[in-house]
Image (cartoon, rainbow, N blue to C red):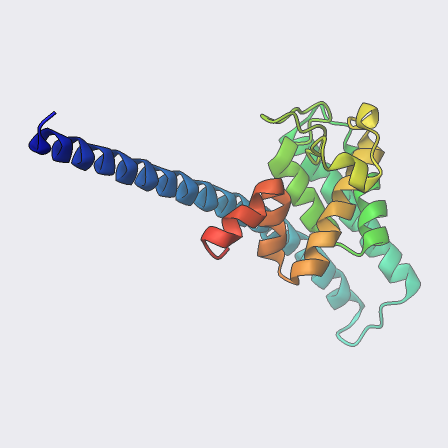
Length: 207
């Protein structure tokens, strides 16, 4: 092999390495972009739906007077209005879903873990469209798409991952951890969706 041929092979090898690195960067950037967009999708659903609920609440308060105090009865009334609206939302998106069971579980566990029920419902809508038997591309199960490696940390038996109440309990618990850790709804939602890949993405690019 001549010296010129050796140099040519070296140049070709270097360009192959550069091309591989560029391809890796592009794929990683696309992954980050997709996760960020999905997180924004959660927020958009929550904001649209939350605005609807807030309108009902404001209308009720206006009818009671501007300086009304939220007594226990009024709070309970708001809860009933919220439940009714949430059930309608679930049925509109997926008429075959057990809407009341889903909403009851969302309200119960969101209160337990101090997470917005509207946000939880938005996550469920984006993750599974209220299909209790949903299976993700990597084997995630149920309404909140819990992964098998994550389930044990949330106290969710894998054989019960399609159980409506247990799946939502685990999902809300998981979401509450991220909200408490990051103190930022967007980052928490990206972390929820990104799973085990999130730490690697953070090292490459801020989210």
